[in-house]
Image (cartoon, one colour):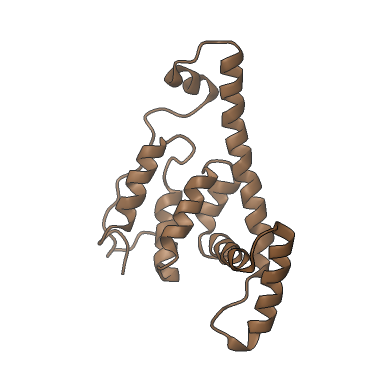
Length: 175
């Protein structure tokens, strides 16, 4: 969704430097050796966790059934139960996971793509989904556009949190 004339202008959220294995080691003050290899592996594992989480969301999303249709309550309960059994959780948690997966895949595809590419940590994506639960589909689309435009692969965690709070502030999205 392109920025509308009524939406406020947004500053670009960019990291000072691209996060690479070399920049990570420099920024972290890690000397070459076993620690450096471990730190580099942690970075790649974090990115793979993001890709794996995106695959899980893609698997869960088709199980979503709209809660607005009471005629589908039995179908929804059956799907929630099947997912709960498969993922070894409660049906209530399975229901939230299915709803979040639906939101991520169908209503926030740009940030989902960034997650699937390994650019957005699972923690950030999960936090974002929780933060937009009470928004309308249009508002979620706006947040999706805003957040997906950020330098998610390199921006530091504290900057992500600050910008996330700012993106939910009054006036940053149409209410």
